Length: 69
Image (cartoon, rainbow, N blue to C red; front, side):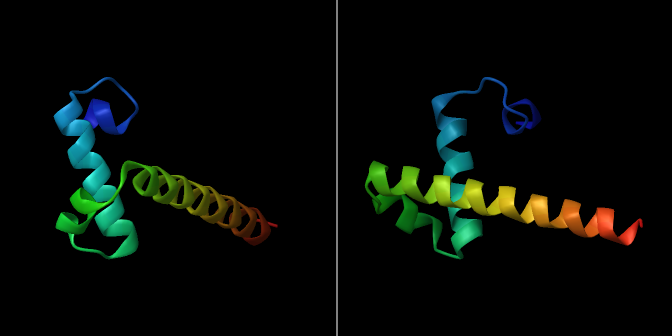
């Protein structure tokens, strides 16, 4: 599982479980709701989550650099 989390290869079942976990955690929804979503919505939500995490990381990096000055 660690390899999969770091971008390595994994089974389709593990990929599905990671997607369900990610969406349920990120959007505070019941994991069963994820299984009922259309694939296009899942992809859109994963993209939104990825972009928000990238922005969050950028802001933390800016704050860290500002605190070190």
